[in-house]
Image 1 (cartoon, each protein chain N blue to C red):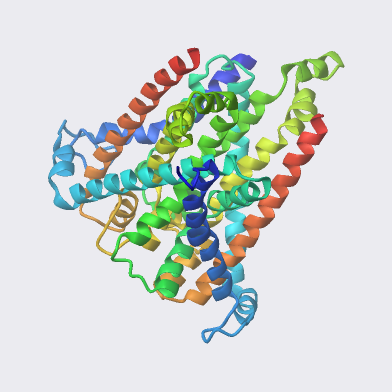
Image 2 (image 1 turned 135 degrees about the horizontal axis):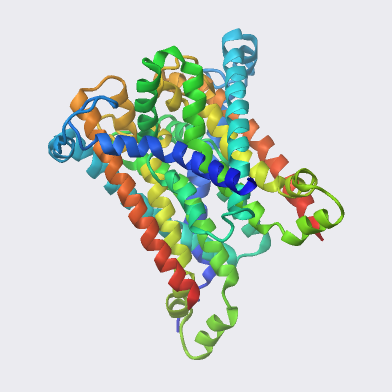
Length: 262
Length: 262
């Protein structure tokens, strides 16, 4: 009986988490404009999604932004983690403290603070993408730092020393020995940065140029009364993202397993 | 011969500069604007006004009320899930945790849209139950963030401690309440921090389900759109105090946990 209860609870919560997305994904393949009304099979939503200019721009913009933010924060965060790891205790303590701030802070506050810094203090306008880029990078970099740091702690310091003894310059030893060893941390930090950027709403609203939209800001605006064909095209987008996320999780998990077996 | 020898510590420099300039400094700017008046004089008028106006105090109380309910519901759903995944029937099925965490990586505005469409059909009109829908959508959004820290804390828990409890005559419920829950308090606290603050500030969820009552985040949003930097900063500063308080409590509990185990 206890066993049955456990299975019941797990599947109940799974249903809660997944049924809405699955139902929406199912209806994205029909021509109905509301859930519950049975209509015919149709790919119109997918056609709209990839032909409507506003939607294409929004998707392109979101992806480009996520890529740029992830690259910059991966560089910054990785360098920060390596540097902090070999710094004095006091310096490292300070860096770890500042690293915690964007992680525990509310996104609304992070976004608002970057916005006020640029607009009121620096007098730099939002129409440059600088604010948006820096705002999201400030959110993502600490997560990269956090995923690289444990790898540095696990590393055998003797390997780096051996590299130096065998004639590597410190720079070469860094690229040939340290970086390959912490690579899994760098990759997972990069992935975290991508997902954080894709999921972000608040920092984006407070720092984006007026005419630019990411998925999040677009969807929120669309819920304030958009055309029906746009609304249902977003169902198609949900379905596509759902499939992509599953694919990435499955692939990275297979990769992760073989990595541990080595 | 090179005069300047490459030092790994130096790698932290760009990271440190970035974090100080775009994370620490903006918060100082917020504190400055929160506690000065329009002409730059130190003033606590904004703070006093905040606590004297029934409207803003009401907003604070409403956000706390929502946050307490959402956090409690998440905890009640997530703890059994995490327990079953870590110690129960699903303990050997590691992939199951991923299934519960996966929704985290799907854009939250799209997930809430999905939930909205379902609720629309079930309730007829979303506007009938704004409060219930807010709670439901927030729980739906934040649940994975509660499950993860609880799971991490529960997997670390040594099975022999639970067996010892049973050997000493505790029944299953007593073991849960006297052994498992007290030893996983760090996980519970970090789960609460993951959910409580977003529940106080994520006003997009309220917007999407047509709940027109303000929470703390909505205040920042409305001051932002009216360019009221001083009041916006004050709200951010009040939220920062909450965050600081949370961080201190979490650190206390984590450190007592470590000393307690030794």
